[in-house]
Length: 403
Length: 171
Image (cartoon, rainbow over all chains, first blue to last red; front, top):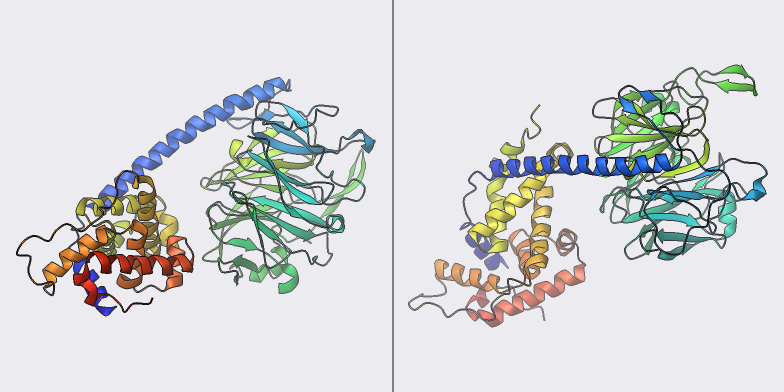
């Protein structure tokens, strides 16, 4: 072996000189970045054109603006739409449920809105909060090419909207779905999806392990905890999980799953001194596509910060005067940076983190006051509204790359 | 701030070693330059993140091997390895001579598949373990073992003059 090693070193020494390869590489990188920007602009223009068609087809109301940007309105239709066809459809822009009464109209069933403005009901998906089914989750992949949900038999369904193909890589007992709110997270490249079984409120975690599904092979891998996956990076990067129950409530430990199945934990710097404000949850924390940045929402004064009673025509409610902040955690250095204030006020509960639209932009969905989808650009600090919902959705999942 | 701050310094320090590996993998000057430039352009594209990670060389090496194998997947229909070693030129001299041995080894490596070549470079040039090699090439340890075995056997058959360089037979 030593001889071969020496001979290989001898041969390697005959390689070409380095020359100006660094400069050529930088020039190539610059060209690629420029090309990427052009492609992105073209893609945004194309999506915008399609989106405008969607909006027009929904007979939109007036379009208020925030700063220089146009806020688009998506008004959900009344009544139950047609069931999702078995064959292919255009990509799904978003999935939603609405609040209604009486509930036997099927209005609580999941619906999808496609890029070309069609709406369909996903009839085989478990409806949220109906008949005690908390497991009524439906999640749209970031490019709208797939949706995932649980059906009435407890099967996890992955449906490819481009082909209409349906896969059932996983099945869980219905009692699990009655006791938990599964959280489904797609990798931005759509190659992997996770399902974890987040406990309801302060319940203890279930014994149902979270799973990682390779969408190309439908191979299912068990993750070491039942909860909580904080998003799935693209490629094969590690998956961040959070488990407040094992670590002690509020310690803010993040665990990153290595490829060999082991876990390593970090406490983000800055979280220790404010243990009570640091609360990770899949709804409020989501990892970037490269796995390097975790966007997390938190109240500046902690989850038990000051609140006050407010009298409204609908009755009394508790509100907070402060607005949450979006904070970025560097998952390698365990540092917290980039505190971003939210553009509009809202009450009592944190909004939903819809995901990263691109390497810089985080999307946030408000489902109550000022219902809509908002963007925060972490590169510039700019925040703006993208979508306005005149009718509040009760549940929502969006194809972040299509917005 | 320059987006590529530190990149040129990194290439100046570690570039020669990366170029040597690229040359071992490709067996040609132009191909080695092409391969390294492709990998370094990818590195430059993500430099701020990779630099902050603290180990750009590991990233570069991983990318180098994966890019090389990926090139092979694209080009294998166009660039088939020759079936036999060319006849040694007359008067080539004693195989124990370093220059002759180098030439024979270079030609023998050129007859291996890119994956076999990558496995040999990782295992015997970089002294990587089987599991490390498997991780870098995104294959199983079993594949690394079998590729190593096939590569060494092929060299023994095609260039018996190099037998004394090779590790003892494992079969």
